[in-house]
Length: 214
Image 1 (cartoon, one colour):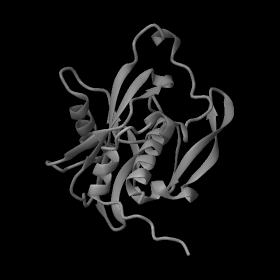
Image 2 (cartoon, rainbow, N blue to C red):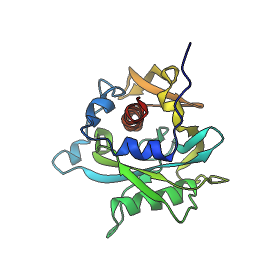
Image 3 (cartoon, rainbow, N blue to C red):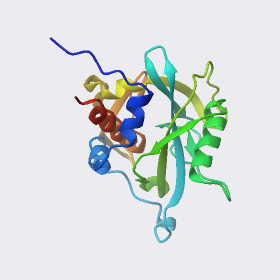
Image 4 (cartoon, rainbow, N blue to C red):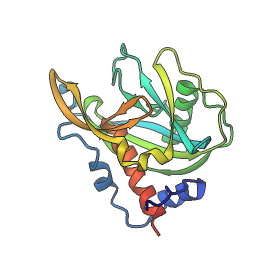
């Protein structure tokens, strides 16, 4: 007899981000590709650039849910990939402020009161030579998400609980620098999520698993 899936509510999410002595890198490595690319030659002597993203969890039909974006194919960086809303901070802007602003711009986040739950382990993205800081937040439900036409091809909202479903994990073939490579991925809705976004979601999944353990 299988047990019922855990209820992922706001308290569980808060507990997941407050775990003591949690090995975040080990959790990320569960969805890390064997080869993640190399930084652009022109940037290798420079420190990585900061980036901020927002995982905005809000109530939905199946518990907490969050939006993911499919990036347009004509963008300069990470074209055609799935990501959390995010980007680079503007002058004088904190990473948290940048994450909120990008979510408002990319997916039309309207909530004025957002609870900052925590930040996942910093992720290095070789292709754009970026240190990505993923902020996890809680807020009210959003009736309609609005994709930013210049960057976002579409938005897909997925249940947070789907991160704990083993059937949502698979190996996929992705083109990388002219070669087809097998990479681990989350299958969330109609999206294949791999790379840095999958690694961040893997960390969150393992945090939630630990927080839900009896």
